[in-house]
Amino acid sequence: MMRTRFQWLRQVALVTRFSLLTISERRGSVMASVFGIAGVVAVFVGVLSIGQGFRYALTNTASPDTALVLRSGADTEMTSGLGREDTRIIADAPGVAKGADGPLASPELFVIINLPKRATGTDANVAFRGVEARALEVHRHVRLLHGRVFRRGHNEMMVGRGAAAQFTGLDVGSRIEIGRNVWDVVGIFEAQGGMEESEIWTDAAVLQPAYRRGTSYQSVLVKLAAPEEFGSFKTFLTSDPRLNVKVLRQAEYYEGQSVVMTRLIFGLGVLIASLMGVGAVFGALNTMYTAVSARTREMATLRALGFGGGPVMLSVLLESLILSWVGGGLGGGLAYFAFNGYQTATLNYQSFSQVAFAFAVTPVLLVQGIVWASIMGFIGGLFPAFRALRLPIATSLRN
Image 1 (cartoon, rainbow, N blue to C red):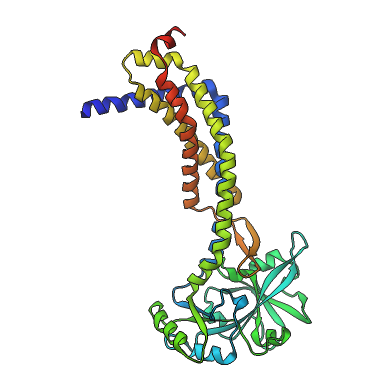
Image 2 (image 1 turned 90 degrees about the vertical axis):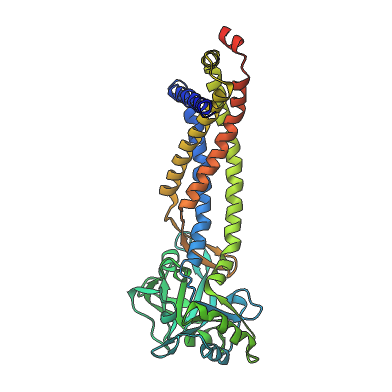
């Protein structure tokens, strides 16, 4: 049994090797097939890298020991609202980490403003966030790049580097009119590629009267003493009759923020790749039918010498898969060098503000591209493989 199986596999290897050695004789159709599959994979991976980059921007800085508190029933900061007394109760809840100056809790105000984009000049929504003194202790991944932190009580702002790159008038030293106030840009900060880089920060006490928000906030970001404290922290707040809040882990909140966009992009990527894949499959079919037709006599001779029909059929299928893997590798490489790290911005449909992010061609996407190429290669080689199996030996030899 083992000897028979070894002989069968050896026949497959020999016939496949012979098939690959004859590729140069039909290089035109082979190259068309390979580049067709490469194009499909490049577009497929490139489109999906948008979703990966967007999701990364929203979730990569989320920490398991950080919780977000919103008003009960609110899905986003836009629809939330908390009073000053609410934020004090939240900050004093059990499980909140303590710093040198008190609890590590950051009450925050979230406002949407319009600014012109550098590339097009058209207005787009930007998140304008009012924060208090402990914000940088809670947002530990935020780091000042240029300039300085805004002074409390002044119309000063510091800008995320993504927002500074995408919108005009946000360079250090600039003065910009927003609403009824004129603001000085005093610093640029980065946040390890996180969504904070798409925002503008200022003193909450200055932003509140500028937008007639009284003493209200929209969320409280809390650093917990340990990730395990989340349960007791949540239970305390949701059971306190003075509050009407919902408590989420930061990662859970940002994951929900990315769902709509990532699903939309994934669906679009699959649709485009499917439409392009039809053409690539026909190209593979043409290549493999040409290969079978060109080697009709050789295949018949091999079978007359004792080679089985199965190895001949499998060799055709393997050749098609190998060509598809070459095309998939080329397409994945092209997508990586063309798209990975490309900076852009798009609308977050949950908060209706622009999020700056970089395309991310991940290993998972490259594997998905190879799988997609394999599917096209398998379909493109399947029918020619069956044709090779059904070729009559005597007729083929006479031809």
